[in-house]
Length: 481
Ligand code: NAP
Image 1 (spheres, rainbow, N blue to C red):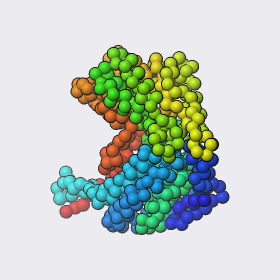
Image 2 (cartoon, rainbow, N blue to C red; image 1 turned 60 degrees about the vertical axis):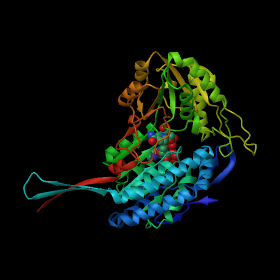
Image 3 (cartoon, helix red, strand yellow; image 1 turned 30 degrees about the vertical axis):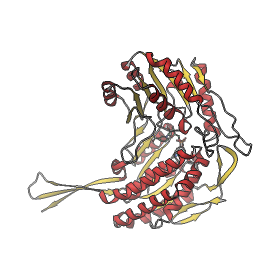
Image 4 (cartoon, rainbow, N blue to C red; image 1 turned 45 degrees about the vertical axis):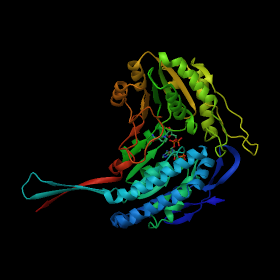
């Protein structure tokens, strides 16, 4: 079956299509999805520009009702959409249903935010003058998303963009058009006017530059790699556009001597290996103090041995496939690099053959653990984005904190400890945007800010009420009383 782009409220086909394959079973084709060309992109931007005056000044109740309907439909169809997500991206079915549920609640949260946008009234320093500070929509926004959260990340960009009166041109990752199309179809039927929301599936290498630099685009919200993010940031600086970037991570997870051992093992297994390690908030550096080190490693290896790698849709699977052949190759390449750097492989480290039903192979890789690694090794400095963790043994909390912060990234960081003193100190001194105490680094709420520091993020935070910072612009109005 073929699926078109949504431009000015019409489904539009294309001459080129992406064949969307299931990474658990590459013989399973999910569908053929249109690839927009520059002409279609231009039409989508023009449609959004035409729709903007009415949408941005129309009543907030209509916006709120539409977002609520979208959220309700996503929640009502969470099993079906979760199955599509697991089939397309490779998360296990429970993880995928969880992501869809999150997307539904995000739309419902921003249905409420529509009617909560507030301003300020201040006296002027000049007698007889009043001041109003208000927030207004910014215009047409480009939303560019990665493949690893194919419905939640689109949701947390599209919902606030629409809630605050902007019009949208949405480009999902080429690898995962299925969830993007399903979400667009729900948005299309929600009652929002034609042109307010447009879907342009297609290659970033073909339409990316125009999506960012087009004169009618007011702002760009991007999630993806540091390389593409930095390119977009410099284009936005050159063209004077507002920009928001969420990028990679190399998140540390500290385990102190006083940690609850089983709790520490479980949260490390969760955030290093679940979702196949393909989460920007995954913890890939396990920083372990010396007295608990050996006990922790033995318990973690036992937990890893219990993890079942397999078809994302099969009951009982803990770890699904890498999402693509390119991601599988990257995982295996970093495993080779770690070995060549002298890291000691104690679990996994290889491609796994799984029977997926049809007999065709998927992109499976065993959860992998390296010991005896040092902070300077490439495996501890660069994002692998697979189920690969490396352990750095340290003397004490002070060294653990220094190692945790010794990275160009700063997205999420975790500590496992029963010490209030160290937990409190870490919350204050971790150089990351999100800190977890006795919780996995991956796993966050939808109603609070999300984002990092250093090379992980750039610009205002996403999600929660902080999302209005990016998706609105501030006006200060003076009037003579
Ligand atoms: P990516 O290669 O940077 O792609 C991200 C998006 O940018 C895709 O839609 C891609 O389109 C598009 N793109 C490619 N070239 C472009 C260009 N020249 N101009 C404009 N857009 C362009 O990243 P990815 O491999 O999909 O995702 C993995 C990365 O995302 C990891 O580094 C991960 O850490 C990061 N991530 C960060 C967060 C966070 O919140 N911090 C969350 C999730 C993921 P195509 O698909 O067509 O190439």
